[in-house]
Length: 446
Length: 179
Ligand SMILES: Nc1ncnc2c1ncn2[C@@H]1O[C@H](COP(=O)(O)OP(=O)(O)O)[C@@H](O)[C@H]1O
Ligand SMILES: [Zn+2]
Ligand SMILES: [Zn+2]
Image (cartoon, rainbow over all chains, first blue to last red; front, top):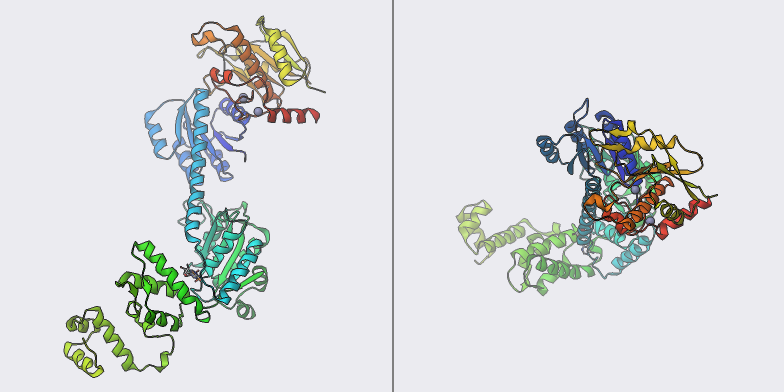
């Protein structure tokens, strides 16, 4: 058990002294402060589990101190101590988030109960947070589907890598399942009882990414109203999944390198070093070697992160996996939508296997989800799939004439409106006469 | 060399069960214990508004009467003790410090409107004395239900615990003694 920390803020020396002894004998690490400014300085060097705060002090008034204390560390339980039972200040203090309120002199039993309850509540809140992270993680760590030799090799590598604590780089096109692989590594590693925290470097501007990763102190920049822990700190004990590492700017590359080497860093706007024990797993769809040779990615960082490499092949290179994945997603969405299971008609199977899947598994998953939403029959038919897939758009795009595309498109729209020419024409942006002419020319039946 | 304990009987307070207290402390701490009277100036410690004695000030006065700086001193009194922020205390000590003070004022059953019970009183006095001395020997509170170092803020809690250290505390007591 770590030693609990308490900060006693009271302007009376005798009160500070006797409470300090009382809490020390109870096993606390005790700090005291005689006024608001000193209390705030101590808080900034915190954290504390409990702050015992006298509301009536010279200088800064207690309510202001309380507000500042909460801003600095929202996690500390504040117990208000006062000589006078003033209902108004009590109500205000509680409104500002004080745990409770107690008048001097205090019944020792009341004080120890109060402290015990405050600690219990704090523990519960922290436990809740941990459970929440764990639950969301369990929901997200789904199985990796695919019996193709290429995927089996990937699964083997995951198992090997999971046993080590080394940094891993996962490569592959977008949508191939890189994040899934990262979560699977974490779920099989000894760090699995701690969180895996994901950050996408590609989707966040540099300045935000910095505070996202390293956290910030209150007032570190405009809008930083509270101290916030960064993802690196949150990943303590667990895994940090840094997606799109190829998109990290040169400055951030230096910062990252330093953290990886020392496991220590400072929050933005802070000067206290924080340490975090995390394992880094990164992913990218970029060619890091080429970036290194072009000077866009630091060589030293490259060598530090590239201890293990896992290549997730694009879906078109493992067509054996397509139907297995498709059936898996049918089941997944049937369950999620509370709908009966549907089979996949042979014609639709053929369409799925023939398509090139430039968006990889993500595109396949989206196609199946859509089919489960719009389709009605007991089986998924080619017509339930997006047109560009149904028509094999990805296979030989250049070989198709404009006319063929137009014909298929008209057919689709017409089908969507149950053969209602007026509404189909409106959607297509042409008048009814033109549509009738085209129907005749292409031999389309309504 | 075990650190001896001196029991200072304050300002004429010398209950007839003093011998029981002395041997109770000796049993729990495995140290030599002796008792002798001490006269303190209590005026500075008296708070007329509360009609109680400031335990910290009283303890400071007691420490000035130490005979042997190598011994731990325990003041025994029947005066009602307080520290400024609390309504009362059974006793007061300094963690790892030279001494402690214990009051029997709120250990009497009569204080709670019950018939006198000397057996209980002695029992409670030993527990509180050992507890406060425990702090002076460097012990913090122990979560074990019947350990003497369990925190007790009302008398029923004192009754619930034993006058001895639990096995975990005993082990660290022995280790401290060997050092
Ligand atoms: N082998 C697989 N088995 C099951 N689902 C997969 C598989 N590969 C990818 N997915 C799913 O496809 C979607 C995209 O995967 P993701 O890991 O986000 O890809 P990436 O990180 O490479 O862009 C996710 O919903 C993921 O669960
Ligand atoms: Zn104690
Ligand atoms: Zn114990």
